[in-house]
Length: 341
Length: 261
Image (cartoon, rainbow over all chains, first blue to last red; front, side, top):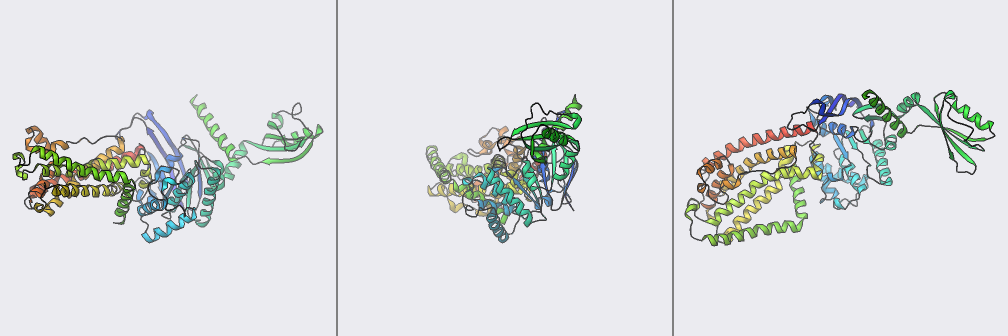
């Protein structure tokens, strides 16, 4: 069952638009262009992209704060532009904006106020607020004013608010931005646990932290300049990337120096090679970039053995998501610049 | 009701958490009455011919003007301020994604301000009575309440419309001809062209009705022409206000600027 379905979405912003009169079409900067994707029930999808890629615009469209110009977006089968109220009833938004709470009120009173907005019955609201405060570890601070909270506590309260109405779809907008590594890890851990508790809840997580997407998401959508440049599970994207790109090998050896013995060899599929000192004295790590299914690894191992070196270990490294992300974004940028040129 | 109470309780808690500001505001209202008392002493205690139709009492006349204008300002400025404040504090986005319509959020967000305006109205009248300048025995309660409610409804429309404008253009001040409505001086003293202008401002009728209800004890029946006029103003202005506001929200959603400031 599809919870979100976006087809051919276009959203543009014009700087010369006032009271509904658009400027010239050339003045319109597309924030999203031909964006199509769907999210199934229970999926946790990461929305990745560099700053200005259109992630926040997309989240705002899904949460009915912004209308699209062309295309269609349905959430729970309701058109977000024409029929936003049923969408809002089943939606929770976790925003990283600390200012979105009432600073003079306590955490508990903030949650009580927002629970009324979501029409949660009073008795159920009290129970749910207690449960959520306990879950995110804010029970002791619940009656303190919000302004006395740390950034981590504010973020936890934002998560509690997003889940207050028991939403079927939770949109997270950079849930760990500006948090210290420990608090960020706690929040991520909590999201993982919550997902196990509520497997039918669908989540869309916009983040710039790729390891976060790797840890939390079944699938990622990578946006760049308002367009989707990759959509699939992390394994699929990695496999696709590795099929077209290079694989990375790491070799630990002793008694071998790179200088004078080895250099990149296109004939053998060896694209690049670098040397780093190992932790043990006399050992060296070699980092290889090679064409997939080429004889580069044999070529390097052979060179080490021939020069009297000893191979201690050899690993084929999984290309990190960061690297895939950077490579995809740069490739797309080069393609666009090539077309423009 | 629970929703309305949630907004009221939220705003009451926030307002009272600024204890000194809250206390000085109430003190300021009392001080204004004292100042008006001395102004009325200067003007003279005898009945003023220009105010004869309201009983000739200068202080009572001005107190009603100040009290009702206070309530009008809550509508005129209050809604736009609510929008602006929630944009700058960042709470607008969090409330907008809830399943409550924005006009409802806006109206409920002003309940506390209206309550405080009614409290100030009573402070002005009570202090005026304590100083012997307002005779509470002459007040026609039902007529005064009817005028008060219709005044609120009239300016609700204008206030909501103005809030819509602020939602789109972000900044602005409501420009209103409050001073030509007879807040501090009777309309009949104005030049004829300004008198015609004041006819189109609902506050003129509201002040006239409230003064007659409070200072002369006029009944609902006696005030029916004014009440009908205020009803017409209220229906027209509410329709324009809500229509204009919805249009502004639609524009804001199209431009993606609802939460920008």
